[in-house]
Figure 1 (cartoon, rainbow, N blue to C red):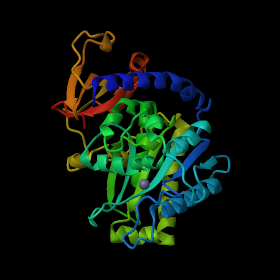
Figure 2 (figure 1 turned 180 degrees about the vertical axis):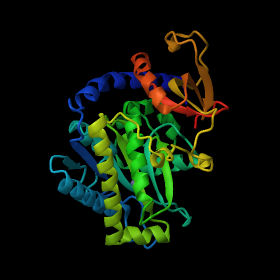
Figure 3 (figure 1 turned 120 degrees about the horizontal axis):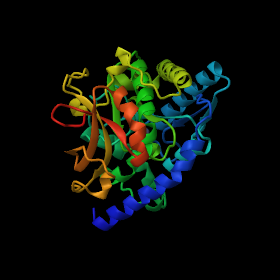
Figure 4 (figure 1 turned 120 degrees about the vertical axis):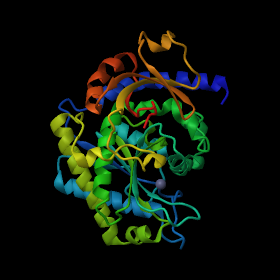
Length: 373
Ligand SMILES: [Zn+2]
């Protein structure tokens, strides 16, 4: 990517941060209760999403049905929670329109529902939940391309998405910090979803993952994108095609929502659930899934203050006076991290002070060889 474009992207990023600062604060309830949820049924209208091998069953139909079922469960159980659907019919919406619905309504939570699919490989199966993040393992990039490529249907996608190229998701890294303010809460919701979904009907748990997903990009609230199974896998497809299967999946999502709401309402949504079941759902990339989820004595948590394509010299203004930091080169970026904490909770305590200087600062889990997990 040429330097001039990099610079323009950076400038745009900071301009957007400034713009978003206001709605970020105004969008939250003064008493911090979860009152509005936006449920986004992926795809729709001229965009069918994934299609089953028989050419009949479509992702857009499944996502709409599960979205409506989930919304109904929430309405029945919590009459004072406002449930907003991005679509309640087979209609086409751009990704930006979906985000705008959530932001305009000052939603407290955004749940985007999708169905996975792999061309020419019927083996992959299971559920996975994505949050906006910079983990760029190959598998996640594929989901990125699949879920973001819908913008090619839009007449002027280069303007709307500021030059984002679905075939070049790495260009997106300059924008991903938008979601950092809600990163922790998004992780909590994503973990709860996976904890529930693995109970069935599709029991293969592919975990909580990070990806640069356009539909989550500009949301100003905790936001997750759940892939509820693979249309390309026969066993998953059987569940997705059946009314009972979809009902059960919606029920699992509802339980996750209830648990998240309970925690959000009682702890202002900021506390981290440290129960063993949720702690085992580490954010991981595909290749790191084989590692044990428990932490070793030398693991630690740090706070990433910024990242750059090129190394930044010690003492540069970018560090804003921070002298103790480590430089971690990973996925093509020099990531600058400070602090060293034994637990995520410890790091969380230090985060607000650093956010005053570095608005996009966020917590990273680092192993003993200084790799971000
Ligand atoms: Zn999709």
